[in-house]
Image 1 (spheres, helix red, strand yellow):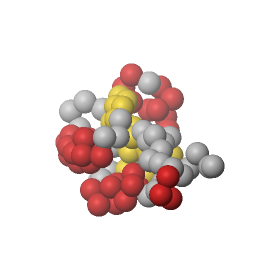
Image 2: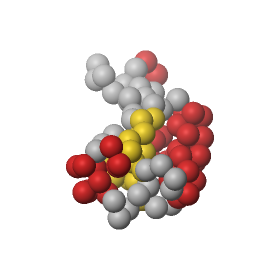
Image 3: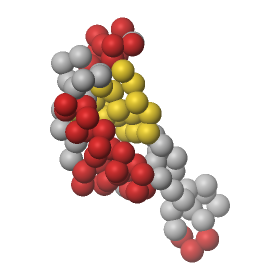
Image 4: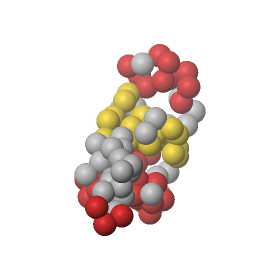
Length: 92
């Protein structure tokens, strides 16, 4: 039987990871963090935070877009986080 399914045909939830990329003293980053922490906490999804001031590669890639939210390593959104959209992405 496929590992995607368990008895009764229900999908097995796959492991997800949300990454929030931002920097200190950024009001948009603080707003995004509140939304991401709420959604991840309710869904039991792990969250990692990365600081662009501590990582030159992240700074080069995202400095104009912070905060940036990645879901499973792929860019989900930047600047403003829509709670419903993030929830849908994590439960799809």
